Image (cartoon, rainbow, N blue to C red; front, side):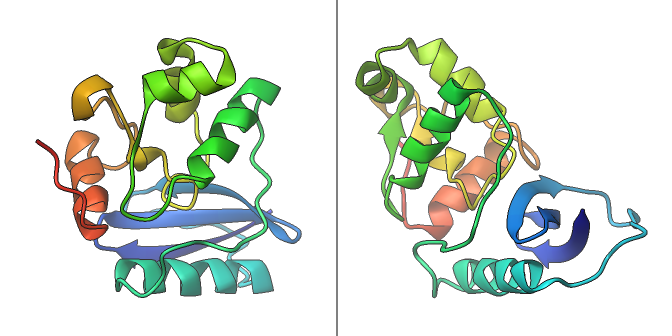
Length: 154
């Protein structure tokens, strides 16, 4: 596994990859260090795309991903990747499309190992309510990511 760090408008991120695919994006403390911080090609590309996203010049990530999870979680994460930049979906709408319940979708969103790239921040509660967010500072980080994409919450 390789890891690199990037400072972003929503905090310091650790990006992890196995071989040729991103496996994790997580918020980290400024003093975290790893032994293997080699910049593999996939990590270089992930950093490049994240920097372009935060600069408002990238609307869709195009990276090889290898998220670990159940088949249901992977189906939720795949559906999240289909939500366009500046768009949103609801837990209930996603649940209906998957033949599941909103709480199960919310749990899968909360276990998303590749936030931002797999845009769980674009999933809202019914009536456009924020719902939850497990990354960064929680809901303030979700609001910041949505605002970056031009989404105004009521």
